[in-house]
Structure formats: C-alpha cells, structure tokens
Amino acid sequence: MLNKFQDYLISNGYSELTTKGKPSTAHDYSKSRIPKICERENITTDELAQKISVYIDKYDKFGDESEFGNKSNRAFINALKRFKEFVEAY
Image 1 (cartoon, helix red, strand yellow):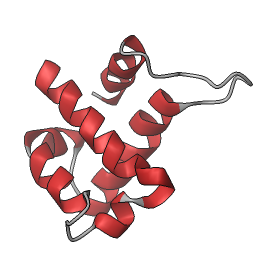
Image 2 (cartoon, helix red, strand yellow; image 1 turned 60 degrees about the vertical axis):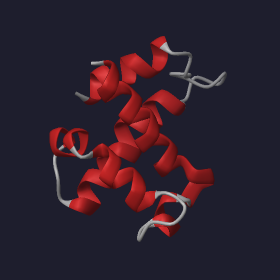
Image 3 (cartoon, helix red, strand yellow; image 1 turned 120 degrees about the horizontal axis):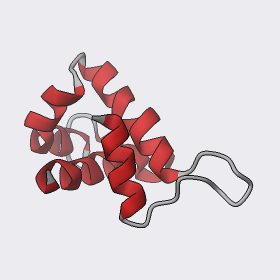
Image 4 (cartoon, helix red, strand yellow; image 1 turned 90 degrees about the vertical axis):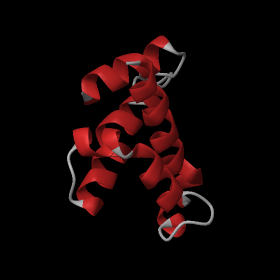
C-alpha cells in the first residue's frame, strides 16, 4: 500500500527526489512518516486507512498527539492528510 501511496503522491505533483538526487516529500511521507505513525500506534497501514480520520484528529492541532504531529514543520500531520486523500481516491 505504501508504494501505491508514494506513486499517488508523485502523480499529484509531490517530488520523489530533491535537485541533489536525495529522497524528497513523496518518499518521506510514504517510507518514513506514515510507517512511524503506524509504529507509534501499533497498527498496520490497512488499519490506519480504515480509521484515518481518527488519527488525523489525534495528531492535528487540538488532538492528544498534536505535539508529535507538529514535528518537522507538521510533516506527520500533513502526511496523514495526504494519506487520507489517497485512501479516499482508491
């Protein structure tokens, strides 16, 4: 599922690589941010997909895990929101 998520991000204009050839947003969200949320919650990506709105609420501005969601310029919460778009598209 995460490879399809990465493909989805790339097809929607997110960078796969930086200008220096290093992994960029699509790779970061699909290979780092979403797996880290699953690890923290002890769930699979399928379980995350089924309850994505619950986790967005939990990690967004006023949720119990908002401090973690805000790390790295809100990369975790932004990854969750893009994952929700991906889940709803498929």
